[in-house]
Image (cartoon, rainbow, N blue to C red; front, side):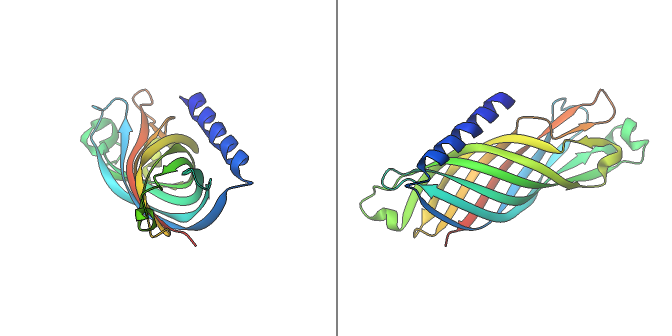
Length: 208
């Protein structure tokens, strides 16, 4: 899966390079929310609840005129969280752990290959439906106090996909799903059980 993600990233970058000369470019600020689960491979070790997080940053877009295909890339600060019921198991409660909020602060670099439906007899000036897919590279900047029970991956890769629309050729809305390919964190006990982030997300970008 990691090789597939790298191959997809290289393909998107190659497409971006080839169309840059003729592409229409723009950029703008992005804000959004996510609904994340810290998902453990061995799900019965303790319960894990989804929590709301957020993201903020900037996005740049390159679109090929006339055909609806293009790419975009972002630099985002993202907070992804999960409620871990460590205290339900004696192995962690004996160390003083309870129901802990696992907060993961990332610098995300998502890249999207996208297609906009733009031949809509003038309707595209009001709304343009679109689809997108691509990889995200995430760099862990900080995390919450669960360090005594967990170890963290400093760099992780993930894939995401989704639907969206553009309003009045200015505001772009996206709704999608993102899942880690590599491990986001591990437990230090019980054979180092591995966990991955799995997130629903929505965001909005205003393009200048």
